[in-house]
Image 1 (spheres, helix red, strand yellow):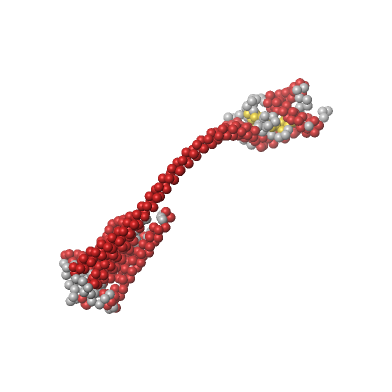
Image 2 (cartoon, rainbow, N blue to C red):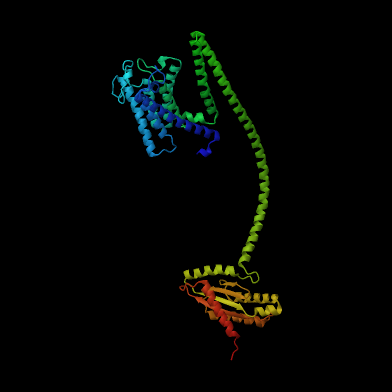
Length: 499
């Protein structure tokens, strides 16, 4: 599928995949670092800054499990063992979050808050020592559900991750602007700063792990909507946060009061957002201009193509007309070539190729119909002497005379062929006559021709006959060899002087 994506989209997909891996590793490492801080009593690992909120042991375990679950679900086609690990770790995250929320909602103590490690340092300061904050429990439940749905229901997974991101973002804003109510629920403990950042990073990693689904698909696309979304999500939070931090710093330094701060915040926000809108509008305007230009060029190209199609159609019609004539002439030529390839040019009889094709089919048909077959091998006597004495034209006349005799001596259904210079063969299927009768008829026609004087040169034929009954299954080569041997023996007997 990656081969069909544009290079820019592929680059964004690779970046998101790398970001998801980094998020998984970072979240798990934060959890491990906090657990190490509890085990070895290292304060800054638990609270980052002295006096700030401490991350609880349960929260650290949840982060480790969430990071491992995200890492196990990242491969494109994870194995069954990876899927099982992902579901187990995600289920643990969801379970811990749900149990903690039940403790808050029903005012019960399920004994999970200090199950792994006692939190003596906060016994007097916290109402529920060792228990993660309500907002952290909400983030744990949402993150666990998002990880459970990772790879199965991407839209719901991203929606749950978005809940985690928004919950953690509210707490982060409370830290940045020192608004305690944004990171504290009633009299309960607030989220630690590294808990907030870890859940934000985890939610972003979960959404990045599913880039071709939900609203992330629009965000990474090459469309105008994707361009606008990327620009706004990259610019607006930076503008708003930087403006708020700048004004908060000025107010802390006593440069202006609350009313001036609000007025300046509104002004700077308007200026910053206007700049973002102008920049995005400019980019979209350029895209629209490029699209209009491309549309104009496409219309011109279509008109040119239509004109060329008309010209080419007329040319093709003329070519087709000539092709019809050419095809007809070629067909006639092919018919002539086919006829010549199967016919002896001098005598008009079948040639060697045609005889073998027809004879094989004829013998098969004779076996099927239980008919006897006769194969005559006929040699023209004295052809070499005639060629040497009177020339090849005289020899051709003798060959044509022999062909006329054979046509007259055999039936129209018999296959009469010239297979060599002075060699003829005839296949007679179901002749109904004895071979001697047929041979005598042919010899009588030869004598009649010689007596009539129609041929200036005497004609003499030597004949050998091989018979084949339908059940003998004798191949054609064997019949030819037998008939040839009998013809040669007949020729020799005729040459011997009579006593």
